[in-house]
Image (cartoon, rainbow, N blue to C red):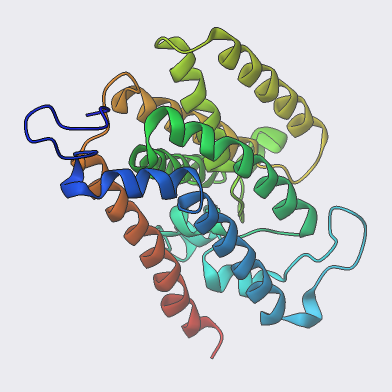
Length: 263
């Protein structure tokens, strides 16, 4: 319910055994958005410290770029980790890793702008679900297409990381919101952003276009199924907690499995 007080018992802010208002407040402010920003930043520092000799010190694109060994250990995805090493769970862990200072700064800036909006429209539980599904869809898509290197610039990635896959999932969720009764201006603005990113992806090397496309598709479909016109309920929060647990488990599984390659 969206009412401040239950009409039957007079209880304030009913729903999710009384904890829904707190979770919604945290989600719009210091909750999931802050978790993503903090964990991504912490893991970025860890990957830099994991192999200081491999840190990139070149131009803007390679400034403070971690080496591949710590990125692999913590859960980089792509055709090589997923199919050659059987690390299928990295479709979740890769979204928490970044390949350089510019990479993480740009992704975090966009997430900091978009996540509160998606949380406002869908609720924090559905935000977590959309974010997780988008990451999995994006990295699954680029990993599969990475099996076809002969496609050249249209192939997927052999080794890939970054929060841009779930970021594009948020784009997809905002498009759905605009299509299902939200302001059409939101969808129009999102499509302009997507178009700009698509052009940049075709010009700038090392941008994972398949992760972006898969993330957008995953976020769009998840948002359609979750339908922002309906109220958020306890099941969404339960699914969100499961998603958070799966993300944490993916990172831990990557480290546990990857240690055997560096002993």
